[in-house]
Image (tube, rainbow, N blue to C red; front, side):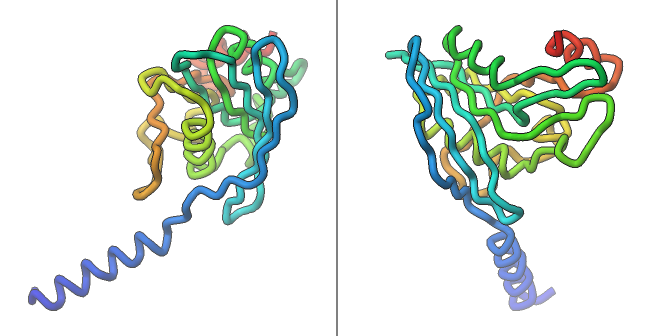
Length: 188
């Protein structure tokens, strides 16, 4: 292959990568309340597929706190439900900041909302990094593995900074035998 063809191939590859790159575009954010040492906010994200909302819980703290990105705000089962935003608020009381993307996991009956867009998850993590004082060694994601991470999807696209690199995964919302107990425990 000639140098000219090789150079042309590399340029096409680079142009394709940049054409697919969609930078994070957070929309409006607003403080909902501040009580008992926790600031609750709402934020929207403008993605190519639409506008998505999220709730944020940030504890008052002089030092860096753990951060968690929740793929969904609720889990609905056949006979009970779990409010993950309420769970995230409880974690904020314990000292962890969280961002909870709007959406429902229909547990035991999989639906399209169960699979969060990897780019949306990465943007939520990026927003949390930019707006809360996080300990970057204590970052996590919560939700089904099919949503983001676990070696299947990139955490951030090239050029996105800062990049939320989770070190722990709270695996609920799945129906496989190993994870069934985790979701069942959250639902109680």
